[in-house]
Length: 433
Image 1 (spheres, helix red, strand yellow):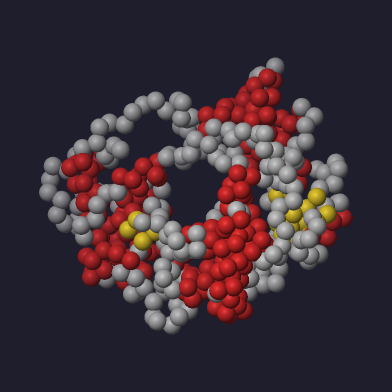
Image 2: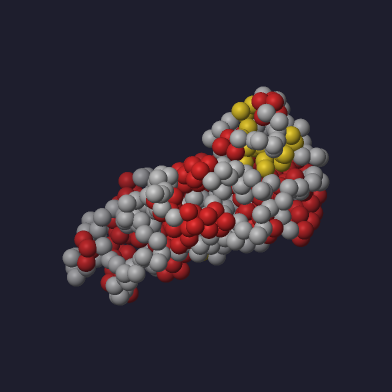
């Protein structure tokens, strides 16, 4: 990790006061969609050697400046001194922040792990054990007990894996030199506010390398805005108090739009000749309209209200299972904006409640695309005149639209699914003539 140039010029001076020479925060890495985005195979330049002593001086200079910012934000001097003294740089945090998985697990692999029999069984057991508390929380917030238990299971395996990092130290490391330094700085200020308000001591703020805390993994700003003191002890404790944990989780979902009494959605069967361009979360129609178009709910699923706005979700293209998702699915996505995660929570809650699992199949013969292959797909699409945006290796809405445009030229179902089969076809097609 290279030191910032402005700091290199001044590190020879003693780093003593809050009026230090550093800038207010670290510089984030370039946006993946920026014009200088390159694939891993192209990123061959190595970083200069790191001097640990100079690096620590740089970190301390940044901390000196941040102390002033924290005091200006209303954090007490006692909390600032207590929380920001003798902090270390955490190299593992920076390594995690800078790494990207070579392969992204396909939705079926993710769901295979998330919806295993042991987790479903443990969820049913905990639903029974915690039934009185969960029923009371559900009554107050309108979120079903099984949904609360499903998020608890997904986020920390029922509290058994909450992370091992000191959140203040991890966030200070990221705010100093992480990819999203401004975001980490905001979270660090919120963490100090949690300490200042007496919810937890600095050494009790334990969580993930990215700063998510407690048994349902709230980031600090979410904690400040949504955590609840359900047990009435004067502290919002998401580490050990199940009343606080369950109420905070349900309260957050309610606050981001959960609708009491409405299902998350349902698996569906699509009619022959379905227009797969309609399969985007941005396309919303009343459930009754989807029915009129021939969309049919799978057997054993909860009835959906006719007038509820819904979208078709095809996480593995037209050869995979299809879902009609409503507002409450979108609320789950506010917890973690991944359709795989949303389906895992939705189906874990359903299975805990005794409903059937996913009945449709998956194109399991498709292999995962590597980062280099995702870059390649975007370049090939662009070379054929299908605008996928600047290649960044992320399969987003622009890339899906470009895939659909190419699929139409090949007389394929335009489902926008980035598959290994599609990449092979793009390679064979070559550039546009």
